[in-house]
Length: 447
Image (cartoon, rainbow, N blue to C red):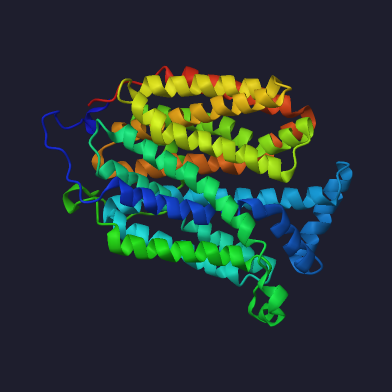
């Protein structure tokens, strides 16, 4: 490890604990539930806006060309809507990629609490725009605002680093992973249930105010975001003292690619590359598993919901319990490697297995791997970094995760369509193996 990243001696006093991990956990959980409410609505929501606005203006031009591409590829009308929805999803992820390092770096300079309040308030503004999005372009603006203010995760994760000792850092990151898993399981269920309530069915006159069939899920997300803002104001005390803040005067919106390339610490750079390659494999699985289940086993939407719930449950158990136990007995690098092996084996089983039980067994192994990889990589990046740069480094880490979510759905979908499901999952296993090979160069962080 470089001299600039030297760690205080082992006998130095433990950092103060002005904030409990439970407060951070609930902050992340509320945020992720609101964020993931939109997940099950994607195809229907995009189809609705295309029906409302496709006949005029730029959207009509885009759709005409999308339909032409669909026809040329031998696909039906739904293919254009799905393709268009995927582009919107990727656009949101690109915004996260650009802004996550900015919010993280700003929190290193100004403190966590103020930046967190700002990002939660900005996200609430995005949800409010969604509530009244009577047109596609207003809905798109709401996604732009929400994506630009999506710094909550990197800032809250940096707060975990602030309030934990180096010895317990990675185990604490397991709680962050558990919040992810629980939030990403609960949110889609709330989205599916709340989407059954259409305000226009009872009050058609509300349409002139921009109320649409998906305003209720948007209202639920807005209510959760407002509740989170109140919670942060009341319970989230500042975790980064003035003495530990970065000496830089201001945080500028930098080129995230350059920020990643210019990482001076080789261990931070390698850990980020490992995490990125692994994320490509995992996101490919996420975006393809329901299509595989439908094509191979004839799964319905309800059965796919159970399948995703099983995946989320396995992830919660692993990150909330198993990884915390393992990290008491093994270091982060060994846990990371075990997770990469488990992921590679799981994806391979799913790809080549033609029985339902094999699909579930493979997903269990994949979820186990994810539960080991995510906290260990987050913990390693935090341990490799100085205290005054935790927000920026973890922001870069989250930014790379967003980049993988921006590019992988389109690539994985194309591979699935052209070469079949087996290619996606075997390719994901190969990526996990590549990440395992890269992890061999990581050094043990100084305790």
